[in-house]
Image 1 (cartoon, rainbow, N blue to C red):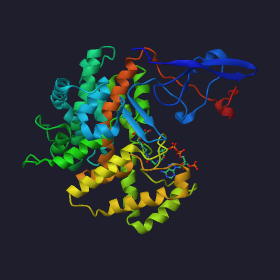
Image 2 (cartoon, protein in one colour):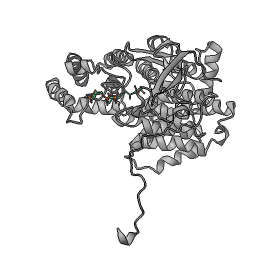
Image 3 (spheres, rainbow, N blue to C red):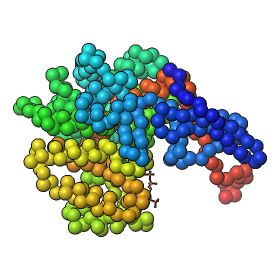
Image 4 (cartoon, helix red, strand yellow):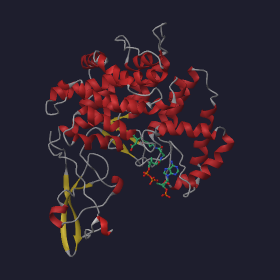
Length: 434
Ligand code: SDX
């Protein structure tokens, strides 16, 4: 597939009295893009953009974010419409294939995922190599990487059939791997997936059921978890997705690339923020402590930040946080936990922060991680499983972006340059003379 671009003119840059012209592209929506890919060859200069705040690393048709207006589209569909009208596997099909499935396409896809949900039995022995108190993200990262040791028949990235099989295996097996990490941490037996359960219900069954008794799925809670998965499914070129793309650009197999994405997501500034946000709410404890923590968050000498607040792209309310807050109320109502003290602290913290000039001026709003922890805790998951659930849901986004990159004729191995400020021309001194 060739990269879609719409050149509308030129941008000009003048260096040492020499003028260079650079192609200017107009996207279907969003800011125009200056193509600097030939700048080094033409002008012998690099551009400098740590954190990539102004840099597009690819052309994509998967997800669009309008940070100023709080808009999130998956393949052009509003996240609000998808959460309201579709389920996670339907959205997964959309992200992977570019269009919503018809009835037959959906049934075929659901069957393909359902009948790939078991792990090679020998993989269960990997878990025994971890301490029982290992963080489930460490286990998940390790086991995902190990998939390439078992599924050799879907690691040839140049074979579309193998790419499709690897994508489906990852989406299908991630819940099983995550649930096994949770059961292992409890010292409880692994629970196999059941083919008559939906994606979210099956995950709850594998996490919360016991071989000794029947487990009754609570449909309201399973539907809420399915929505949480949809909200986390993809998010343009965030840190973990960019990690997957960069790993994939070297030709690494898809399992290794997704393991790299899991590792990047784990950071507290990224996917680890949901666990960190709940820790923060528990540390604040009650509403009368909020002012003290807001003060800490505003103090540039204090490393404390309001976890679940702020975003590189959203300079308005994260649309996912709005839906997450609504889902939070639904779950707590269903569980008669309406008076959950942490929800009260979260709501009061949000109210105070959004009225504070510091947060208003810096355009800091709740993000996807602010309410998700309260929901996941209410559903029965421990904090150290929150980022695992984020990784579970984001796997389809990662693999869709990986697939788009592999199929993009313009993509080459990612190899950024640098602004070198180190020593030059040092004279070697023998050890005895130093
Ligand atoms: C996710 O990229 C994605 O799309 C990620 C994600 C996805 O779906 O993949 O959306 C998921 O990772 C959401 C973000 C979760 N992280 C957190 O909630 C951690 C807390 N937030 C921050 O660490 C921060 O807001 C980031 C990392 C999210 C964004 O950081 P940026 O864009 O680099 O912004 P910045 O750190 O330069 O902050 C700008 C200013 C700074 O003040 P000054 O240096 O200008 O004086 O705002 C301040 C920051 O100190 N600031 C905060 C703050 N976040 C930013 N101050 C207090 N509390 C915060 N949470």
